[in-house]
Image (cartoon, rainbow, N blue to C red; front, side):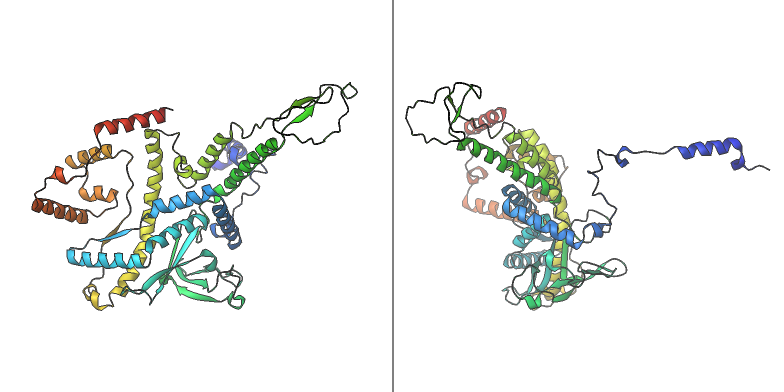
Length: 481
C-alpha cells in the first residue's frame, strides 16, 4: 500500500509549495530603509515604556510645554475642553429628596477641594506625563463634614527606589496580584527632583489600591504605565521652533547689512583698490562718491520665505493629529475655515472629548464618589444612606456651544416634535440636569404669572433682523476672502 504522501507527484507539489514564500514589502530591510527601521524592536509594552524611557519622555514633554507657546496652548485647550468648569453629579434614585441632599452636599465638597481644577491638572498631566495619580486621603482642615480629599501625585513619585522593581509581580512602583490586578503602590515621600531633604529621598509609603487613582491610556495590551500623549509630536515641536528661529536669524542677518560695494571688473581690472571686508559708516541723507569702478548694492531681506506660513500650518496640523485635535483648535486660528469644514473637523474632536470624559467617569469620578459616600455614611447628617448599598448616578459635563444657535434650536425643536430625542438628552448636550432646568423654568413661569407678564415681555431683547443680516454678510465676506 502506498501512502498519498509517498506519491511522486504529491512530493513534487509539496517541494514546490515549500519554495513559495509570502512577502510583505514593509518587512523587507534594504539599504534604503535600514536606518529608518533601526529602532524597531520586539519589546513588551512595559519594557518599551521602561522607567528610564518614561522619565526621558516626561522631562522633554514638560520642557517643550513650558517653552513652546503652541504646546502650552494645545495642552491647556485639551484640559479646558475635556473638563471645563467641572463635572456635575445627578443621582437617579426614586427618592427626589435623597437626590437633592446628596447632589448638593457633593457639589459643595467638590468646590471646596477644587475638584474641577484638580481634574484639569490631571488631564494636562496625562498629556505631558502620560499618566495622572490622585491619592484619596483625609484632610481635617476642610470645612465640609466629609473630610476626604484628593491629593495629586506626580508620576515621578510612583517608583521603586530599589532597583526599579526587579520583582516579576511589579512594574516600577506598582505591585500586582497573581491575577494582574494592582495591589499597592510605592509612593516616594519626596519628589526625586527635590533639591532639599536628601536624607528622605528614597523613603516611601505603601498605598493600597483603594486609596490611589491611576488614570492613563493603555495603548498596548499588558501596558501598566503611561507615556506622554504628545510623544509623537515632540520632534515636530522641536522642528517648529528651529524653523522659526532659522527664519528669524536669516531675516536679521539680511537686515544687519545696510549696503555692500561690488564691482563687475575682473580681479586685474581698472577698479580702484579697496580693502576687502572693510566697513564704511554711512550717515542719513548724505550723498557720497564711490571709488572708481565700484557700485553700491543693498542686500534684500528675503526672509521669511513665502512657504513659512504654510510650513507652520502643516506642522501644527501633524502635531495636533496625535491628540485628535483639528488645526484651527490647535492654532487658535480659523481664518482658513468655512462653516461646513469647521463643523466637520470638530465632530472628530468632540467625539474624542466624549470618550475621554467617559473614561474619566469610570476611572476617576466613580472612585472619588464611592470614597466620598463611604465617609458620608459615617456622619449623622447622612444616616439615611447607611441602608443603601447602590446609588445609581450619572455625570454631566459642560456642553459645547453651537456655532449657529438658531439652526441648532430649530433642529432641536424638530427632534422633540417627532419624538427622536428627549428633554434629558437635549439638556445633557448642554451639560445641564433636565430636572433642575424644568423646575427653574416652572418657577420663572409662576413668577411671570404673579407679575402679570407674558412670555414675550419677559424675554430679553433680541437683535434686529437687519443686524443679523449684516453680521451674516460680514461673515460670508470673510470666508470668501
